[in-house]
Image 1 (cartoon, helix red, strand yellow):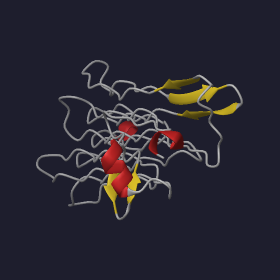
Image 2 (cartoon, rainbow, N blue to C red):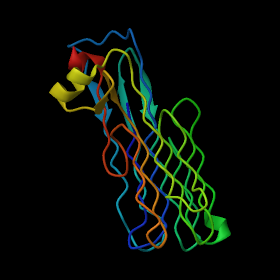
Image 3 (cartoon, rainbow, N blue to C red):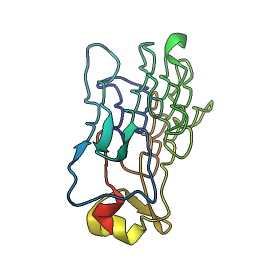
Length: 212
């Protein structure tokens, strides 16, 4: 289960990358065709100008009788170049690249994701955290921080991900909940987003029974 990905602020220089939605899973879970399961797919955070931070994403979950609920938190939005703080989430949003209050990356949720990277005043922003790694920090003179890589489970291969349109295939597996790359300042460079869908605008929610 992957929560909706956080967003990056619109029309704002040096905005931090959106955090990937939280990523949780269960293995060896019996799911019956006679049982109704309620699946909520969290939406990705929308771009918005006011307030200056990104728009809020939403959580994802799956629940049903005899089944322990799995809930994945939304990703945090990125901080802005105007000093607005990044937000915590499944994975935290990256810190903005302007005034100090907005520089720190948002925190992630233990067991679901990682923190966003830090930005630097009047320079560049941090990347959003991913399920598999923290977002990259801005380094002086370099590009903005890369988004943190997503995570994977061993029983969803890259070929299955391609067949069913889930995750981002890489190195034999499908990755989920990667963070978005941060925004540069004055042409500071374009960073990469982390591997794994659910960054900024997409979310994925699949149970093992769907891909077997």
